[in-house]
Length: 286
Length: 314
Image 1 (cartoon, chains in turn cyan, blue):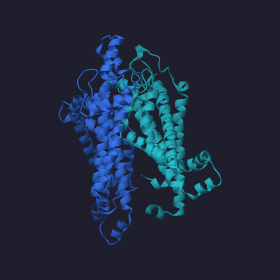
Image 2 (cartoon, each protein chain N blue to C red):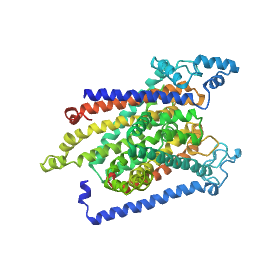
Image 3 (tube, each protein chain N blue to C red):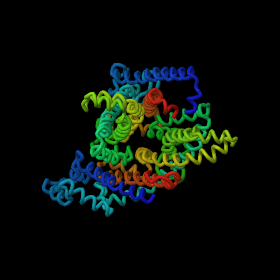
Image 4 (cartoon, each protein chain N blue to C red):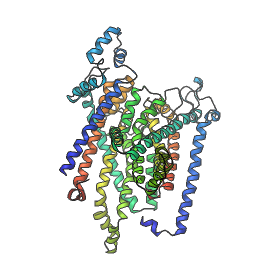
């Protein structure tokens, strides 16, 4: 806090510009990743599913920039194709838990009473499970599949959003503008859509964007355990799991998808940190 | 304080019911009928009548809530069923695998504290200088690396390239514990360093620090005697909270390093669809997590003089 007081106006403006520049830069990178995922089928140099056993486990270089796997499939094509599964699944997951979690949180905060008590106890129970442990159990009961992995992680992740949304609603519920809106005859639906949602969106969005990277790693982790995307689907976690036995002879089979996950998570984490600095300056540098 | 402890224990009851009910529901409404799984795993063929008899024997034809109560009664007495695969009682199996996991967790937590606390403090004291940026950079990197990738990188580098350490298993003495510990501690430490830094920074920005500076007390004295003492409590609490991610992380890391603990047990059970084993794993992990959190809260309340001596509202 004290740091901020020392800043002159000019410096503050410069800091604001700096954050905006960072936002544009990282936002572009993230958009690049998402566009790669969207247009993956048109970008791949080879068919990511076509086997060519004569060219199995070729090292990187030459015709295959990142080498080939044990079935002779082009690694670069599989990594590009894999971005689809991982990135889409993570974005879908974050979207789902943001909507469900905040809806629950808004209802709790807005209505209070028994509904609030009930939903908060339910979320307590979900929060009592270590996240990955519960996700493993859910995914194993639902027998794998990328969509089931998303459902498993959604089950365990929504309470966090419910908590954030609820505490925000509680902090604005007694604001004069809420009373004014009610007096001027706004119905519940209008109150929530026009007055509650826009005013609590900031912290919820920050939580959501910061979560994208983590969720990506957890989806890939479940796939790595065989609880997400099933082979032959190109997915980074399952590609790494399948390449484990070839770590010694052909490490590129692991390194290519591993680096892809790492870079993607880095990009989304950078976006997350910048969005937080932009929307919630109090938390800056944390 | 007494009132607080009683209240916390009472709050624990619905949570424990919730945990067990959810775990029960999960395993009993799964897509596969457990009798069918049993049939597949034992390799025998059963007629529908035989299956029905077995269902009645296991109480699977009763209503769900009744089944839950019966099951809960058994669970409390330590009978959590037998593994579909080996026929072994799962409680005994779990207990036999637990020490390996706890050992791994202790070494990981120790390494995490050993790395994060000094680095976090250093980073806070040197805020916005090169040391701070470097520490933050590395903790950012560590935060973006999935632990299965870290483990494979470590195996590749230390075991296969340098041939310094064993690839897997927990039978090579102290050497086998290094890589799994390193993997778990790396991701935990990256997050924790940031939290330590934030906590110390917040304390450093408080008014009493400026007051102490104005009185001419040396920076070192302020840091060691006031700031660190005040922030230790928060730092310890945050560590306990991060144990949740550690409990989940052990599953992947144990199965990669063939570390014979409960995490590997659960992952192996997944492929065999051995539901009782997964169930015992989920319930006990949740119970351990809840107990750790409760314990931390109580210690926190006990140690914090503001709470112990003052308000009771906590």
